[in-house]
Image (cartoon, rainbow, N blue to C red; front, side, top):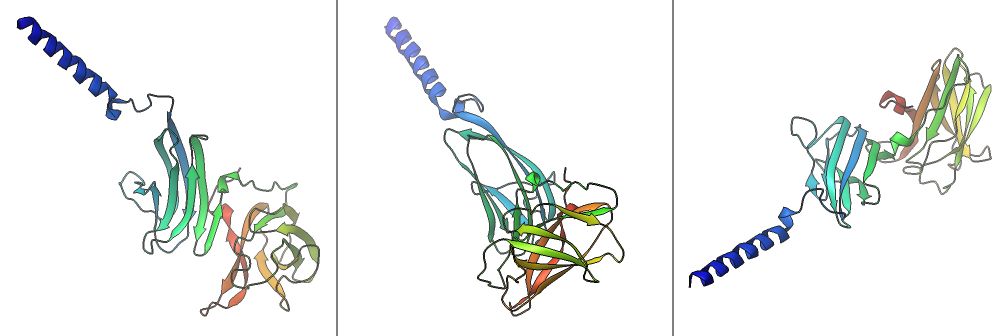
Length: 262
């Protein structure tokens, strides 16, 4: 009888150990080939009126040491996690007040380390800021520019969907240069010219390869200011009045005021 009880006790211990070891909670955090550590670096600037929030697979991320889950203006955060098998990570950036999803990113274990970098503004989103490079001035005393036009046609409703050129003139009408292939997706090639006073310059937007406005019957002239020995990243923005009617294009937003570029 004693031997039977002993064998039963040993069997129970073995069964208990086997069950515990097979429990998912006992799998080490980084312990298998299918569970891979991941890291997403988040770097951005928000000029949105309301604060923004970030969710990872529906869960709000804490931002900063104060345990808050919303941010305004600049954000710098590293998000460390584990990919379990073929799991996908979905990162959403939303307006805290309106709950509008401003942008969505999807990540997989194929690239365990990745980056989110953005500039956000009402009706404007510029992605992959970290991949943008400044134009390098060829000599002292020049002023340089790259352009992007992310909300082209938002208010003008122009039927022209192609690239644009910008004819840049001094206020006396002298042409300083033509910057080609301005579009929604990426910054244009670099253009530079000698700084002079007065620093005001005018850029006319036309269909690529022509002198024709991209908005029929309406010249689009953008007022800008040269800065000596500076290279700028200018974001062009279509504007509207209180009734949502197109009111022109603005060129005052310079991303070098918000980020440090290489």
